[in-house]
Length: 165
Image 1 (cartoon, rainbow, N blue to C red):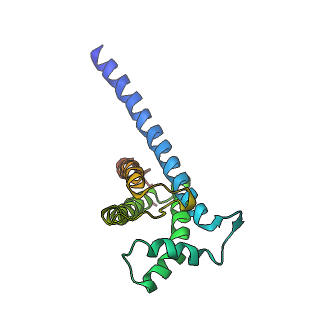
Image 2 (image 1 turned 90 degrees about the vertical axis):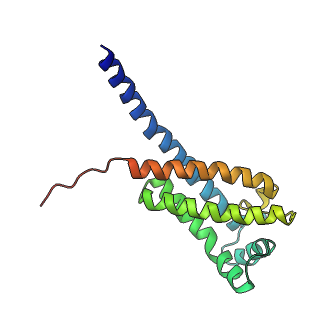
Image 3 (image 1 turned 180 degrees about the horizontal axis):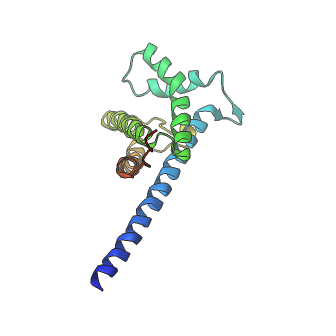
């Protein structure tokens, strides 16, 4: 009887982890899509052609990168965030998407640590919806934990075997 109870608990735990990872993946995907949205839509209008200018000023305020890199990053980052968010929501290439998300969040956190050390009061990941860098660092820490769980879960999940042709 003890083995049956243990097997039942294992089955429930196995059913719980995929559900928790799904919720984490969907939440993380939503956050990344929202972050891209705040960079592309502000002041009541879409800024698909001039968002780089405004976003580059925010990136440059961190005082980390030279101007040519700031401009390239400002042009690319919202689209990278949008793509990662969409991939997380869909579950496509989850192992790679999760790993890239972890790396990107670690880079964001390093920039926020730099801002906190220099006592910079700047906008961060969510455009006009941002909070102080120290608070955003706490938020990103939580997101990184979720991203790590999703990535590890994706690597541990059993993939369907292909039948030999």
